[in-house]
Length: 400
Image (cartoon, rainbow, N blue to C red; front, side, top):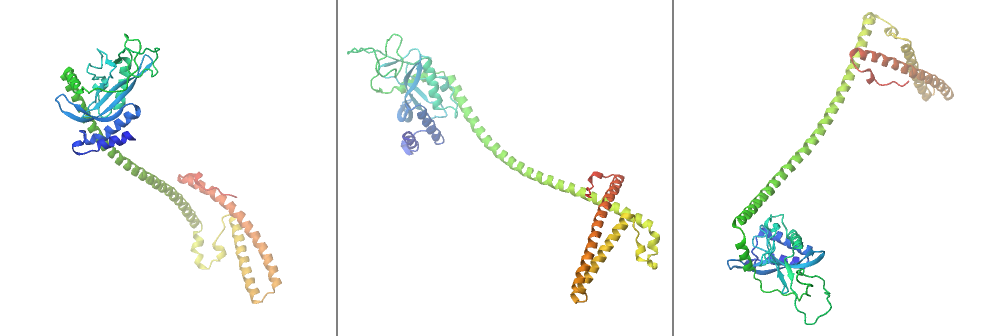
């Protein structure tokens, strides 16, 4: 929490005391340092003065402390300083090993020059914005574990004691010429000669390599900016396409429902058309068969002779219906007579009971006859539908 407050304070300063970093990268610098201190608590961020090769002095952020290094199954702590230059994080930071008074830099070393400047592949191939200080510290530990850059010097001890170090290996491993690392004194750092070290490093670097690295970093930065812009544009287009797709799916469902309803309505109309055609055929057949009777109907023909039953079931149905309606009229007449007092009440009840029993028998007979007629009609309809090219299985089943 103190580290975060310190970084927020120094990076939010304005005016002459402001740190020379770009405003659009200060938040990323803060995140890098917070992640570094979380992963390596021994590294402490602070501000200090850095002297460039041309003599300019500038106030920059640095992370000073130690990183753990595993060498020959023993963990040592290598003191380093990570300087965040003005162009950070678009360009790599400057890293120096920071030997104490009882340490010396190994010469020659593949990654550390005599002035302490560190050059490892991760720094040389720094890519913005994917490269971070945490990964840099891990790479430093990996390379220094293979070949430690610092060794401790053996000092004469005026009070010899048993060969025992109560602190364990705390800094760099001892060189092969020395038998035991000395107990490290309290940490004290001499005046920093980093300006001269940077000048030596600049003289030793190949100008073509520097130009190539800067060109690659610039290209990577430009490509990253274009990729971010293109990604935002494509995301907006995809969002619009997703919305259009949802609307189209909704309309597709509505159209499917409408098509299904129209198909069902078409089937219903076709069935009704078949029924109308069959009924029209039946009426035409009846008219042809009874044409003579129709002509003579207006010449005093008896009403009972105007209609003829087609079969025994039709005649039975007509008789039962006529008897049922006649009994209904008789009961109605008895009700009126009973209300007017023309018929005694006991006689009224006896006649109604007899008529009701007879009416029940007629109605039961009519129900059975109707079921038989429906069965016969369904059979005829099936035959007619087959004749007109329809599906006989679409007809309803008649329950007897």
